[in-house]
Length: 260
Length: 260
DNA sequence: CCCGTTGTTGCTCATTACGCAACCGTAACT
DNA sequence: AGTTACGGTTGCGTAATGAGCAACAACGGG
Image (cartoon, rainbow over all chains, first blue to last red; front, side):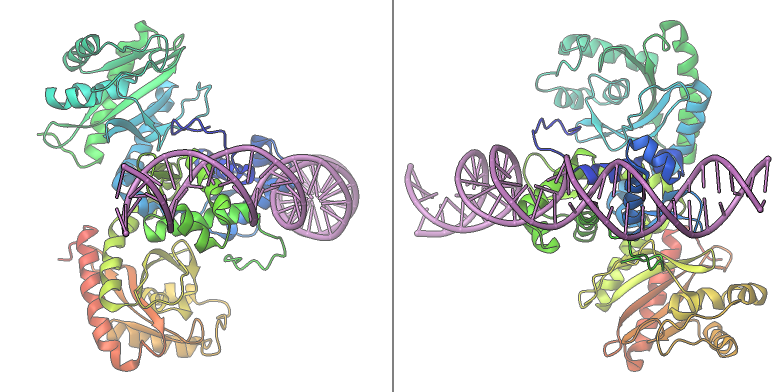
């Protein structure tokens, strides 16, 4: 799971990897008991208990009283200070994504432009989601994602040239790697006010995104819905686009970006 | 290091504990290299490298490009969503604490009242600080800390009765455990507008705190400075109190609590 | 009061994590 | 321009740790 594009042969430290998986589970589910954690990780209850105990000793996990389920501990605040730039998206984006994911049944993401890539800053899984992956904190290519296209389409021509310099990586068989063709797509995205991604990041995956506007009408983020191709059909796109626009406006307001 | 008051004999999972120590180091220092991390943790460079690699694979650690120092990764955003209630203190309190800690040379903390205890939500270490402990995310007793006394003093008489019900734990030889005596101290705190803690939490430790006001004049937090008794002398208190008050007002403004 | 479930802990052992040595790459110095 | 030093990585072997098992404790529900 080398998510940084580094195909290293180095083995992960298994117990550290498991401890992080515990935290991911608690972050996703809100709370969980030892038995549930053990089942989810595929380890013995005693192993789960010891992992949780270690995280608890460091305040990264806590529980109400002596019994009851465990949850993410406030010791996390020590690390939150290192990612303050995106904390507004976490605080405000979470409820917006959750509400939309519940309505659509699909996974909803918010991404911002960060150092030439799309950076996912908030996510909520839909009830129908099969994949458990959390993209938050991960960077994805602009040319091969719906959010990326939205962010590119909103950039100036100069910025687009800069962002698209270099080869466009074929992430999947259907990835658009011709810069001329991509610019046409971006032109269309600017006109339509939304972008789609049909199996361009990975086979079988469809996504659609709309822009999130700042106070001056500029695009500060993109919000998207993603799911398997058989569920996110062309026919369903208009409905999803409209729901995304409503959520986008809600997000703008909650972020304090009241558009004139 | 059972910070939850649980004197369990269970051994910590060493590699998980070390991984968290890596994160603490990166959060505290901003960035660090493998050699520095290894030295700080007292492990071999290869061990540090593998720990960092595992955290990197989960986006909890990242680095610029292929080389250069490591820092806390944006994958932390996945966990920040679980502590959204206190994220404003992290985002706004950090710079205020850092600025004051630089000026005073002592450790500065912000604490809020949470479930009958003082919850530390932001901290910056002073240059003269000897202890490396980060209190953020930890809960401390109200009666034995300067912040706790400030928060208690601002509570109504009924709330004070409720918060002080039960025995007052003697945390140190000088802890005030007599409720009548403590109420006198709280009365004085309300009058003075600050509270001191002279070796009441632990021997050799002095601290002083002032309230942080909300929009309606209510006390929403306390900000404190702490250090060894020989540096935080009685003589130095007026200067420190004044600096804390300035920082407190700054914090209120930054939090959006403009006092009428 | 009994049963079932959750969570903890002592113990043993196998696997993992760790340290060592060697190596690679880069930067700084001569 | 070449050499040296430093930071970081990786293969390998081994010992220590982490994991699973079994037994037990505590609590809640019927």
